[in-house]
Figure 1 (cartoon, helix red, strand yellow):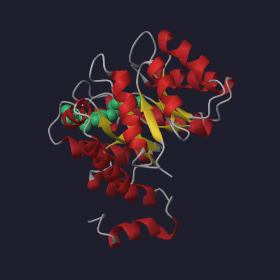
Figure 2: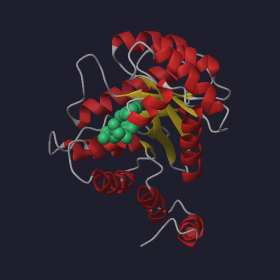
Figure 3: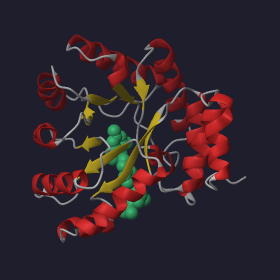
Length: 266
Ligand code: THG
């Protein structure tokens, strides 16, 4: 099963930022319900954009969202203290987004994750910066998996984020990340791979087209989760179709259901 992490509750988005500043619960509830109806498995919650307000915004968002949905949440912050606070507020096991190999994030996070009931997104980032090659990504992934297994995590609960970088920055960014995903999924069997899908199209026109094609190409290499916008109908149709072609859809039933429901149109 592909894990769809709905990305829309993020205060970098203008409307979400305004709704959060105005404490407009109806806007947030409506958006969450739409993401759930569209097929989200987790709702990502990122309150980082209003500088100085992250803690209060996160508290407010978590209470509004948990009044609205039973879906589990993906707690999205670079700040270990915010993640710890948010963990204390959730009603069911969350996906923690994220831990990385950067020392000031790794040390507090690994200490705090030990024994917690949760899943975790692990970023292939360290103090030298973004990964520059397939080996960089793979070696960091392997270190993260080893460290997380040492504190009791099962591979099934680890989501590796190889860090998707824009095509507008370097022509090899697509192949590097696709090759890395294939290597992670074959050599670190059992883990998941995920990440911010739309990073690939940053700086390009017609971004949705780039995101959709990229998702299908990534899925061919084993990518089995994404932080993405489930309200883009076409990308959800690509997802279901690619899953069917990969053989993950018994008798193509989900595909056929999607066609009958009008969500998959050729
Ligand atoms: N990896 C991990 N977590 C992440 C990211 C990642 N969390 C945040 C981000 N990247 C993924 N979430 C979003 C949420 C919304 C948008 C993109 C990524 C989005 N962006 C549009 C844009 O960039 O143009 C619109 C912006 C706007 O409206 O202002 O919608 O990589 N682990």
